[in-house]
Length: 433
Image (cartoon, rainbow, N blue to C red):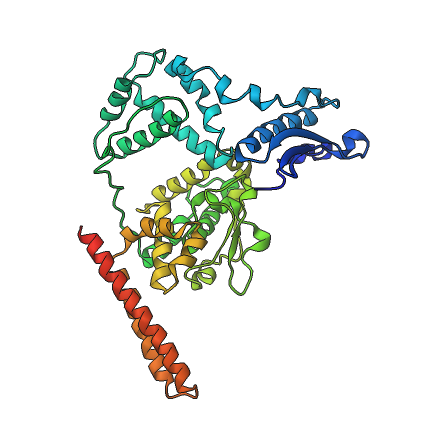
């Protein structure tokens, strides 16, 4: 849990910033000193430090910050007192069974964020869930009805079995109904048959070719857009070399990134108000692309010109990157570059634990996500790399190292080869099912 959180507005920085703090086990808001002639004042919230209460505290902090920014701050603090939680808990809400579907939609957001920290990613997830819920009940003339089991059945079974729409509708309904006192038994196998669209990942040679294409300046390009193509080339190179999600390019901390000798980058979620998997350090794969694509010399003209837009509508950046790929005749998608990074890392002999960490995954998530992209060629590359390692160790025997050390290294390599052979066998069995 963060000890403080603030949202700065550069144009109003002189008016001070309110911050959430943890005082013992309780939350409070630290107020700007200048409001009270240099004395430090706090607004006690009487809320224990929990994710749910942190969300309440953040809403209160934003209210206070708006009043500070627009000279409406109540120095007595009476305006900002948080009501006793016992009078605002779920038991005193309007009973869910008395809500129409329209009313349920109206309070969905409030209930959804009671147990979730509100941020850019969680807000985006909520919006997608709500969109699928509304779409699922379009068969109704209006939403002034009381939800029934039959309505939910129709919403689910009107979608095509085994489709992405069926899968996402079921997920959204589970989240939606979970926010209300509404019992519905989801039948097993509702999403059976759903398989994500099969992707054929680009080779590294195809990625290099695409890098050349994406930075070609259009003949009719306006002079104020000159340099944007080169910027797109750099953005493409960073996504491909570091396996980033497109929006994470906006969260690169340049002061901590692209430094020799390893030229790693630091993704700082505070820059964009949150990323899907938080802050982390990422290393380039392959290393030689840092020099080939001139990555250590950032070309951020396009990002800088539109940063204000991207800060408020982060998906716009990803959408525009996808459009750029299409207009340049590149026949793969942004996430294919990320998937290829994961496979390339294994082909280079890197451990899955480290790759998962760099990509912002748990090991299980990493394995489940990328095992379907393994090809026989990928397995062969990993296996041959292991064999080369054994050959190298055998050649070293004629050097000056003690035989015991050489034998220990050789044993490690043999164990690794056995692990790779077992993994190859397992993946072939999975692919055959």
